[in-house]
Image 1 (tube, helix red, strand yellow):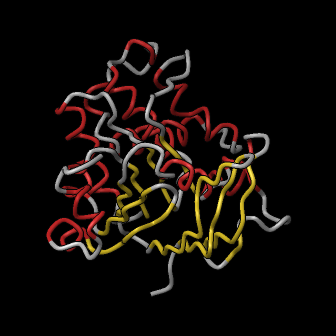
Image 2 (cartoon, helix red, strand yellow; image 1 turned 180 degrees about the horizontal axis):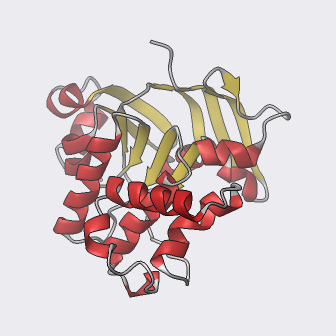
Length: 251
């Protein structure tokens, strides 16, 4: 199967510090790839390479290639705005816009050029349902999104990303600081979404990676140490460092 995303010898440095070292990794359509590893292992840096968010950091330099559907995303001809629509991202800390829930949901589609109120409402409802939030907010759409709980705001951010109909969804610690119930709802949404999206999930919660990922990659000090099916990674990893991490001996 042709990978949805493929990196070749991907490296990233900032000043004299090398954050990523020759990452070769393929991500396939309709899978959830979990990325685990201790802090400062390069997980988030890798994620931000995939839709060129590292471009926004002065002094950040990348080497190697990232292919998305056969296109090298670092080619000078690539429309970065369109790339970031096709490869959406949800961050660890939810950032609800200071406006109504409905306006949060329609903000991106309106920028995209959708003007029909009925179409915008359909997009909002569909995306909120996909994020398992619709039933909780369907009667509150005119209320400020800032009144939602932290877990609800995170699902709102997930729904907002889905409203732009991405092909790939990047998640950087989306359940960080959330209660178990909110975490379970996001995990349920991700499991449901993989039938139509490719999902890359960075998480410090090893158990979460074991629950929802089809494959898991282990990063350490800027290197990808191992990548395999989640079952194998959590039962019989090939590298002792991966084994030590998933069993809690370090990290």
